[in-house]
Image 1: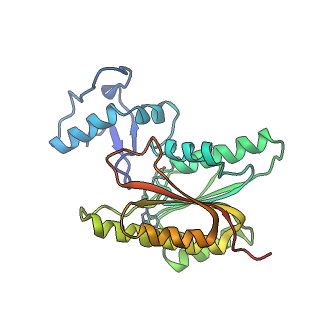
Image 2: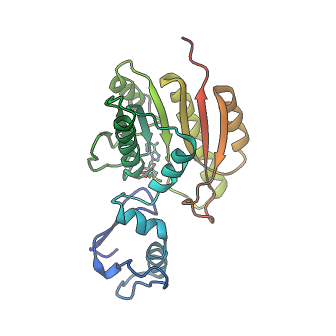
Length: 254
Ligand SMILES: C[S@@+](CC[C@H](N)C(=O)[O-])C[C@H]1O[C@@H](n2cnc3c(N)ncnc32)[C@H](O)[C@@H]1O
């Protein structure tokens, strides 16, 4: 990888552009990385990034990753992020979902006059560079009980309004195996959510589509008033990625 362009670990679509060598100012012509020397697969990756409108937009709007626009679209449509709310972002690195969540709890809070502080907690296996308005909990495996206990301590008896998971394992290339692993991550998120969500709260879980979807949807249908499966425009059409969204958590006893 060229020294002037850093590909962030943990997500194949996340980059910071730090060089005019990769100028993205020509919207209608396919751009190829002429001066980029590397393996063909790396050249293909760079070419795809340079020609992706969401990568350009992320760069322009200072999001760490194009994934920001997946959450933006989900929230624009379903209003899952509440003014002054508490959001837990699982698998948050490099941090674009947390950036969106932090902006939205603050902006919405100012807009509706509640002026509540809100909180976003970003947890990931990997390191996360600091993000304004976000409590970073890095280098931690979300599925471990010690991580979840620490999250509970961070909540300090408050309930979360929204739990987000864009967690994904490193793809092994075996689609069924990867599907099973990400399904386990989803189950772990749902189990944790049932402990921390307020009544009426929401969950978003990334899944690579496959045989376990039915089981996950059935678990979610028991937990939430409404369950939706969403493929945002920003999600690449050649990816098996979908998002399971649970709206209005209904199990919490008052
Ligand atoms: C697609 S990236 C997330 C991108 C992020 N939503 C953003 O917008 O910047 C998936 C992340 O899930 C994290 N992850 C995978 N398994 C995890 C686990 N068990 N605990 C915590 N994070 C995990 C990976 O380290 C990776 O950073």
